Amino acid sequence: MKLAITGKGGVGKTTLCALLATAYVKSGRRVLAVDADPNATLAGCLGFPSPETIPSLVDMEDLIEERTGVKPGTPGAVFQLNPRVDDVVERFAAKHNGVSLLRMGTVKRGGAGCYCPENAFLKSLVGHLFLDKQDVLIMDMEAGIEHLGRGTARGVDWVLIVVEPSRQSMDTAKRIHELATDIKVSRVGVVCNKCRNDEERDFVVRSLAPLPILGVLPYDDSLRISERDGVPPVSSLATVDTEINNIVARLQV
Image (cartoon, rainbow, N blue to C red; front, side, top):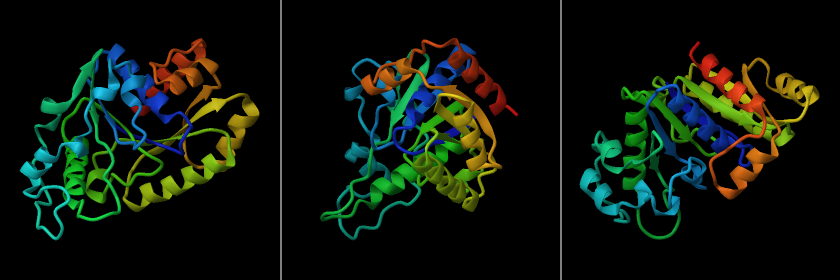
């Protein structure tokens, strides 16, 4: 199962990543979680000890130079567009409570020098992860799917767009859906978070039809506090666990 999870900032996509990862581990699956969001908080949300010490792949300049043939920041250099990445998970993934985790990091922009080797390395890695025979891959992405390409899209089982009942979130979801359609992603679904009542749920359904609503998570202060504090999400509502299990079941279809 290969999941790319995205949505507007602040809607709770990292919390959903952690909840899904935990559910898959409990079911006996092996999980690789990838933090591809510049605001990297997935490690803390999964309960990794000292998450700030987990290095970002984009900052491993020696590795990038070894694989691309060019030192990051070297202007005008010719580099390997398809560097070797098949050993990255085994060598560099942090492990905790049944979850392996990679932190991708953010390619620097602006200023002097060429940062293309980092882009080539990360692009190759994303393609490898989605096309390799992983058990469960959950990628926490920023508000878009820029990491995905047409070739990678065929390995994605679902793009999950996390939304909250707000007009801004609906607009972001529609843009993401358009991008996913452009690169031929076959399955795009919505998970509504922070939903207080049926009226808000109906607003999301109407706004994003005909996209399938794969789950609706109720507003839960304990989840909000967990995300704010960067700690593993623990819900005070039994309905959250039930709905997460229902989402996992729907993703198998």
